[in-house]
Amino acid sequence: MNRELIRRSVAELVGTFALVTAGCGAIIVNAQTGALTHIGIALTFGFIITVMIAATGHISGAHFNPAVTIAFAVTRHFPWREVMHYVVAQVLGALLGAITLRFLFGDIALIGATIPAGSALQSFALEVLLTAVLMFVIISVATDTRAIGTPAALAIGLTVALDAMWGGPISGASMNPARSFGPSLIAGVWENQWIYWLAPILGAVIGAGLYQFLREPLPKTTS
Image (cartoon, rainbow, N blue to C red; front, side):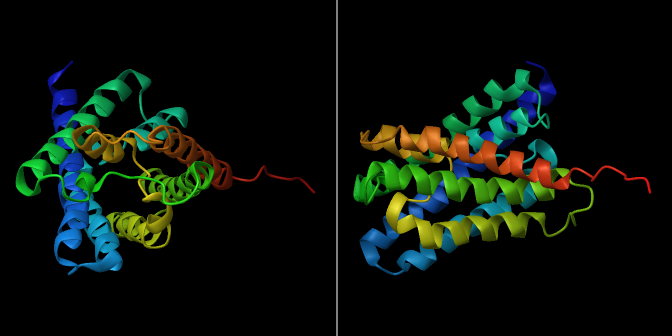
């Protein structure tokens, strides 16, 4: 692995670590104090994504999510040979974040682990939908030269917050296999965790594919 790829992978680790410590940390703090509320938790996830994209987007692309990395690779915006490096870095960052929260707060709120509130099928479908919407926004601001560059981080962060606000009470609004895996491993929670790997990857590929289709220029017609 070359030095450039190491640098980018470390940026992915740092970003995912920040996502878990801030977002899942908000879940834990709210469970302790009730000060943040569901809306506050959703906004925390959105805010941390926004600031970390702004901080590291120019270094690694700021995926922070195995589903996003895989969807970029499927749509040929990211080399497959580097996917495993990013995914490993993201998972490690999430694990370190969960370990940090466990050290700081103990086993409160299952370290922010995602668990379906309803049926597994309902949460699966919801995670597919939420991640598809998120990836649609991500790929639009990340790959289309017609998109305005400066508000990209804000657009993605707001999408995360919006998805978390309405989908969080049902599925946890993970949209991210690493974000779910880290807290689940440290808290020892494995019920229906397959949802949070399969559904986000499927949703991200759908969202990326849909945008790719929509942005293709229409064929020229002759009169």
